[in-house]
Image 1: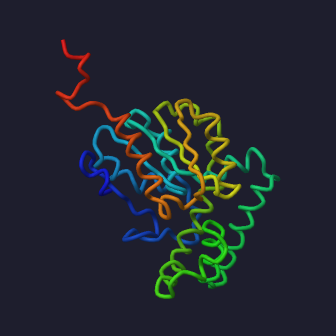
Image 2: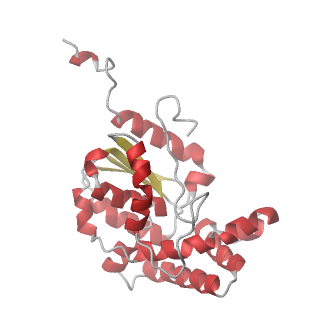
Image 3: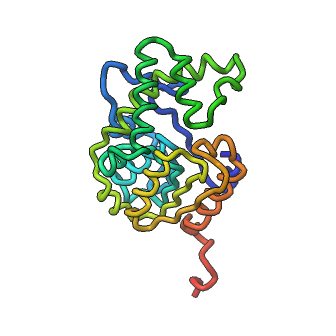
Length: 246
């Protein structure tokens, strides 16, 4: 946000169960459309047209938002959206699908058993590497463990989104799709599927980083986003290219 503040007004949102946003009811299944309904007031506040950036589950929401109201988007930036529904539809028996299903089932079971710390360890070590939980400072662990209550409904939304892969061929806005060479097979499999159908996609593969690179390697990710936004941002009044002035 600090990097973009010189030119853009940046709005960061808290999804269900994050920050100051209330948790989603645990006994109700959640869908991406429920998160879009939550964000409707934010999209109104963003103005007539805006760029949309999403990472992981936020990327899945951003993709659905791009389908719901494409006329308002200037561009779309995605870092490995976890839209596992398209993977399940395409290759449900693949190693990538079995891998992420096991993580989902393990973390959900541990949440149901009340073992939030073990659920967080399974989740964090999957996405960030074995031993990450053990290396996490003790004071931070309770907050991360409590966040697993919000992850369970997100799993449902990511796995049971009914939108078919081919629908995303209608997302006609310029799209930057970022991936890491060290990301998990499940995230990379989803990326391969989506980048084959998005019509105006530019793929940037970042060497040596994983799924959480926006947090672990912002120095590698943020410049790519900034350059893309600058390239797709419509010129301001009086800021048109020289060739347009007659």
